[in-house]
Length: 490
Image (cartoon, rainbow, N blue to C red; front, side, top):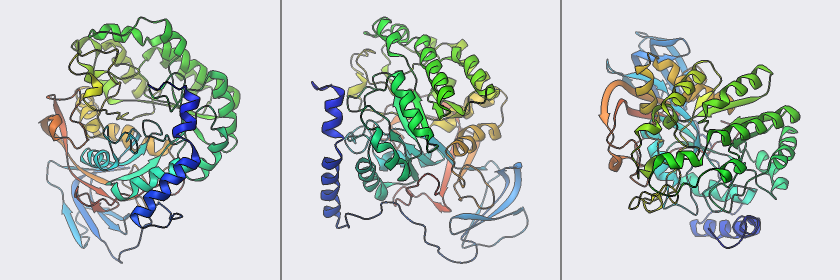
């Protein structure tokens, strides 16, 4: 932490003029025009099918069926019965144990570049995403320096991301004290919405909004139909909770009580009700909040909810003391809580699943001491999310179609990504070849994300992504071909 307060930090590292100077230097070093558009455009390649995929198990909007897919210029332009003998420059025939699924849409990824690239970066994060069947990620506005809280900061991040992306990348803007005047320009530049915290974010350069600030910002965002996504924990409750110091996980769990989430979510619900804004609850971990969320949805509020793979699979009772790789905020809770989160998914109260991929260096995880009070809170999982959720879902008798709905179609719908999340005519040919019955043991050292640390290390999971295609081109992990995407233009 710095000696200066949050507003001083905002002025220092998020200052638009300072960021523009940094961006100009970087563009000059790369030999590019300062005014260059960082969004990569799609150039048509040829007529006819560039790619054909054939198989007995292709997950379409009609379910898992035998089909042939034709791809032209990155889009699905034919979807025919198997045996139609479509021809293309490249033909992929699925093996008997493979299912073709739409590329996943992960709406919650902390890439951390620029500024904290030793934690994660665009090259490593997007390789990890592709290896996990994720073809679109949305980058969070904090943990990078500067935070994405004004137009120059977004331009800097786009400039850095564009030549490194192995999958398509979109961006969230940030809503912090003092940046209300910058929200509209970020919206006009294509961010998918705005993230805020209702308590300290963990980094001083991204300070929280108070409840009244939240309402004020929601009123502004509702005037142009922008989405606010909220880290909902109440700081007052956490201030009164036991301190988390030490290596005992239950003590850390007690320091982030369910009540902190419940109170903050109630604030978001009521402020959404009063303003008519569009809101979204991030990484729900408290099942106690489900009844009021059901009521809010029944009342017609434009409110959605996500949860994460770790809340659906891991349980506090099984976390060894000192195992800070499990630390995240809000925390992994009890088995009974996990079961109710699954019920919330199945009844539609929880809309979709996102990774909240939030890695850091091993040193910041305090592995040597295992002190939950000082360790960074975040779980690295963008490469493993599909396998983690599928492993748990199949034990519960759920089908692959349902898992993909939660991890591809529904987030795409909420983000208004009109050509992502489904295998259907006119959609981007974002595809993954998935072997749902193949088991593997997680080796953290072989994952693509920058730091080899994950709570899933040495766990046996089901489901292997064998190949990933972004707009019809296979990811080779050597040449970045991902595209920067904007809200409303995908």
